[in-house]
Length: 98
Image (cartoon, rainbow, N blue to C red; front, side):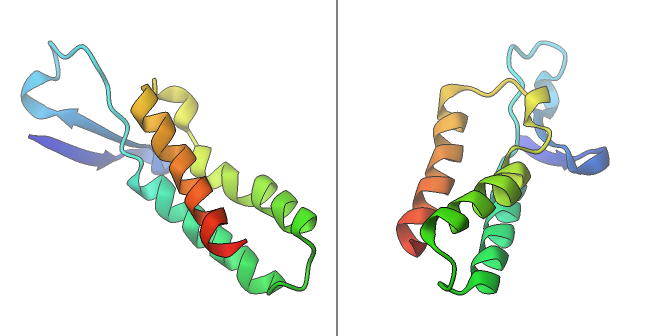
């Protein structure tokens, strides 16, 4: 059984409760990171409302929203599937909105 926990300062992680001691891997829970990215990216798009150029919008997304997606992930060893999941979040958002 895998449960998702939220530690101090919003660091999310999941542990298999029965395999805590003998587990070989540590998996990060990325759902709250995805939600935070979508929330901040939608707020940016709500403010600029297609008035700003695409370059300015991309710079705003890069400086404000990507940080919420990557917050505290340097502490978690991410596997290839988790990295592609993060890539999908960004690519899907730009596919739908730009």
